[in-house]
Image (cartoon, rainbow, N blue to C red; front, top):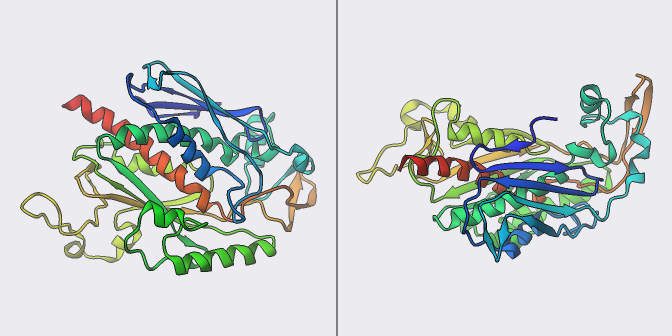
Length: 354
């Protein structure tokens, strides 16, 4: 199955299924001699792991990463970095009822149609558990980029119809203080209540994640097809349940005039506004890069739904197992990781020009 590798210079190839032995990956192209903080990588995995609060799936996985190559005495060797996270708390019996059925809005039907033989347990390869590998690789990318002054910060901006409004003085601490990773305390409390109410009805919720990238040098991005925003869009839309991407002014820019939207230069080449979202002509301009990613309500709901089996017979299907009511709190480190993988790819290309 193609499509398992991301990047050209700093490459990540992932492997594994939700209920298989492990999820893992191989990073190729990472320079040698770089100090790697394994504890920091584990902390990123802890932010993504299931069972971290009452507002996430209660599948209880430690998600402890094991490195098999590419790191020696705490530093990269320049050879492929291989790693895995073992699956230890899967309950495959929860999926026996869908062995011959297609769940609405899941990957079951398309995977069956394309591959015939596929692992349906927990979504198999289509499961968001695959994003473990992205978080590991993204954490390594973040550590490299942090030394260059490039940082990433994402938070939950909206769940359902509840939007964060008080967004002054946002920090990692204010984000992590909230069980739903929303730095607006009032909105956070309302989001938690909404999740509880929705869970009691056996339903799910979507929302929006906002991400800000600071410290990018001028010059990241390539014309014409490898524009920085295009690669960010592909990265974000490759995340499970992602349905929309916008950067800078996004869709609101469609309501503005050119005179309102243009970012006027200052004498130091900074801009008075940042409707461009830090990217002009597909290349970073030195301003903050910011974007939003919309996530749908996950398709696994605890309600009876009409569907069909593999023979086309009408059936009634009801969700079982342990699922998130809303994926957004756990998707924060995934969004940051994918952003870091895009930026390090373009940062390494940019270094070639210097």
